[in-house]
Image (cartoon, rainbow, N blue to C red; front, side, top):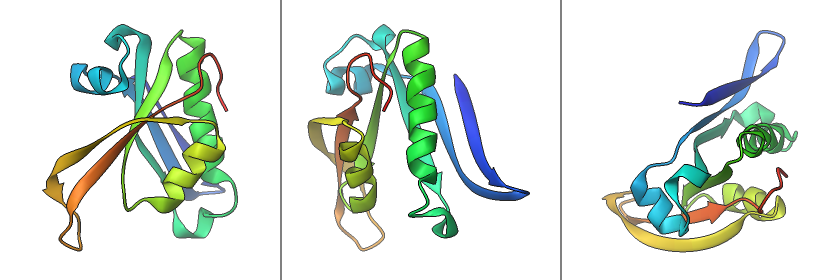
Length: 124
């Protein structure tokens, strides 16, 4: 774990994001050296926080921290996460690969995982 942030409204938690070192598998998937990357393994916004920009702020915060440390953020998202994919693409993140997961989703589909990478040198 490199860092983590929580979005609050008073004492109510609206969301959270984490930033970690990137493992060799994610680095290979992203096509960049492991020591140049940081992973966003978790980004979550509560239902009440959605459409309020909370996820965007959390993603930008984690991205800025990675960039400040000279790292480029990467993440993986399951194909069913349409809202998340739209968030990443609006922020300028680029799809670099997709792969079949080794687990099934709640509706019984084999997971399809997409790897995204943040724009070079920018935290958006």
